[in-house]
Image: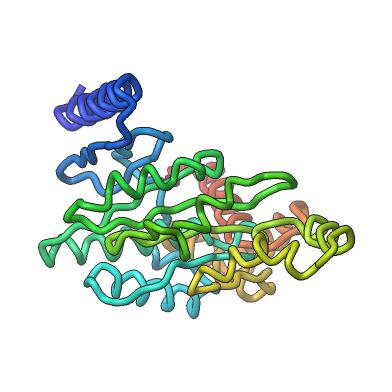
Length: 291
């Protein structure tokens, strides 16, 4: 076991002990334990667990999303520099790089922050732990670092009420969002709830507008809406070529395109996810290792 592994296990154990003591004493206070050189953590509902190696795609490999990439980079840079910035909702088609973009942007900006003598920490929170978000906010509010709290594939189903915790943090709650925290989320739904749920609320309510306003207005609390749409064939092939070049795969452009299109046809979709899956399979055939 390396020294870093040992330190991360110690930090995780200390966080669990602290959480246990808080539960026994009935105290809401929590301690933010950050390891030197570790800029990503997972929130477990009552403790931060360090993530030593984040599964990331280099930002230069993300193709076909240039405009939203630039907007998110600028927003994150502003936040890292202590300037005004908005919470962001990345919504739209599956497999088009929403979560990959968040992680890639964090990696790029975090490196710049370290060079400037500050820290930008990425904290992933599962949708199931959204109700504990206020506890996390209180834990990290007083820290000198700046934090992006990230929820991947955020959505809410019928009869769920956990969205209220997120709503109060984003805007309108008594405590609100700390100045050193930004919230990024990805979702396939722009309004974070299924259309049939909105329609049902509208059809059965005495005042249809008021009945759905509380739930639909959640997405309005994100200052940035970044849309990801299904890619066309040229964009898909550009993604394939970008991955192939990055991993040293050279079988000729015509052959590469033909095989990539065949692969997409069998999947019934064109996206960044399909592109990297194709390149991984091709790399395996050629005896190359792709992370």
